[in-house]
Image (cartoon, rainbow, N blue to C red; front, side, top):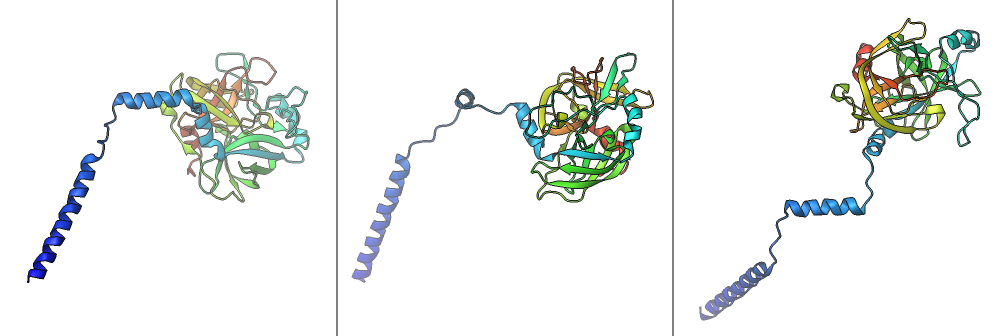
Length: 312
């Protein structure tokens, strides 16, 4: 009994020493300092002063980059006979320089349809596809579903015997026109194959836009791209009238981010990286066919509603 008592006393003493050691270590630990708002502000200021952060436009463009595609349309063999009529309407095809080469010295003609703004005699241009020496035309599209459905302008693929799309990773596939809405200048394409893990664009709302809201246009102007231009919303609820006055687009977004031949069908994006419109036309008071500061985009709501059973 005496031996058991001695062992018990020893164990108790050891336990007390162990507990005392833990308690001392805990008491000796430095107390954690509570962060104040001043500490947070100082850390943020230090980061801003010592690290270059991407601009809002750069972040928006990166968010949409993998969803933007180049659309190549091959006109039917007999479209040459129809070209004078198309040119008369002002839907001219600009020349595109070869990839990885210096821009062509030829003056490109705008791919958009010439027209006039309501109440104004100034001609306007639809940002139509770039023309290549082999007859291909270049426009832009944006992927809107995980299955690869692409939204673009109707005039980008109108009269084409074959349509190809090129994705962000270089993958190229033929595409079929699932639906065309000429009166709204919209078309829905379905490629035969798509890259793995192809991200669809995030669709936003044009209702959140106001004059002065920052926007980014992404596309293939003159076949070069994807190219990014930034600007602001200049106005809302604008109208565009075709050259023959047979087509009128309304409820358009007016913006000043540069758009040129080849931008047609590309996304207009807000600073969250969400698609709020589809670039479709520019206003140009002369025959140069180049961007002078006023572009138009179909709202994403109009694009979705105009295709009936919306794929997105």
